Image (cartoon, rainbow, N blue to C red):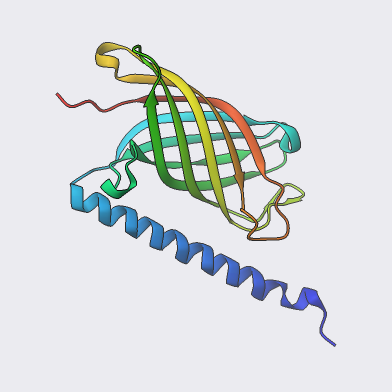
Amino acid sequence: MNSPRQYRPTIIRSRLLHAVLFTVAMTSFALHGLNAYGATALPSGYRVVSAYHKFDGTSQFAALFRLRPPRRLRSEHLELAIGAIASSADTRAFVSLGPVWRWPIGEGSWHAELGFSPTLIGGSAFGDRDLGGVLHFTSSASVGATFGRRQSASLSLRIQHTSNGGLDSTNPGLDMIGLDFAWIPRKQ
């Protein structure tokens, strides 16, 4: 009789293939929408967040790119984040792409944002912990303010949760809090 471990590589390859196909489809959908509206990707900021609860001592560093979203999303922008999740024991690259919705708070320069993005992490394990696959979803909420000449910079306090959404029976989730610094392209 074959042991369950014998089928593990096939399951991992299957999940990885599904994750890659999903990401390619999502990216092509987003880029098709961007192409239709003539947007270009501009570097727009940086993120530094630290984990709390289960993954203490883990940090995330990312470069952010704002992309014009397809109109049907009704979002402020699409955010492409490329970076790394690191601890003293391990480092994993990640990429995420998803919509961000923004609402002004009062009459001043304050705002609130909500975001959701599929996230690919370069490995299904982090240190000695099984993450439950490479395809995850990151949801976030942030509060911040714009400042500078023509209100062209933004600093936000961000909380986020990344997990596989139940795609795998192992789903530890990664809760983080930190700062986003971004500059906002303004029309002349």
